[in-house]
Image 1 (cartoon, rainbow, N blue to C red):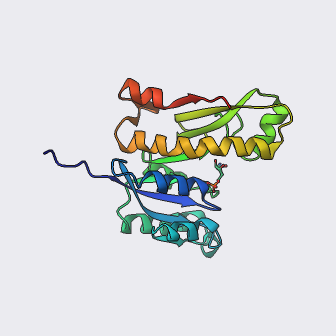
Image 2 (image 1 turned 90 degrees about the vertical axis):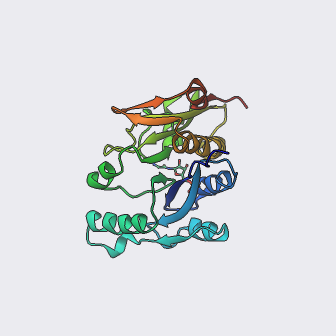
Length: 220
Ligand code: GAR
């Protein structure tokens, strides 16, 4: 019998309700999932996701950004928590705090984010409203490696949903978040399981199956 491949040790960083975090924790319960969620950190002590993580048995703590004089000292405190837990991959899930370039570069190729648009469209905030105003027929979500420029890193996986007549930002967000909850665990599995990696500033997929898993066009 061959030795089991060790699961990647993952920290999820949140700022809010943590619904993507919950979907990642649920997926990681599968015995053959290649990552283990060992820590949840929030920059906001009142983030509802912290309690949801604890209820799921995952150690969760706040590193309150307001307690630090600058971004570098906040990031150093995050780094200390990540080091103490032996973290190998960082997953940003609704983490709404800008990280320093030095922190991002230290985690290059080992930190991913989910963004609620089909990047490179609609970087930043209010993505659903902006998609409606732009009149796009398809909208969606993207998982990307984190680079210093906001929402600009190489794309690992995307899922698309239709924009329907009568949509407002809330109905569109509700359609997209369903796909976020499906896409993010799949993208993390791709990376943690060695199906995809950052190479020379691009995402390399190591098998056709991995490439196929990275894109989905969804109908209703
Ligand atoms: C998600 O829609 C995520 O894509 C978005 O915040 C929401 C967090 O929800 N992230 C960003 O906008 C990052 N720029 P959740 O806390 O329920 O996972």
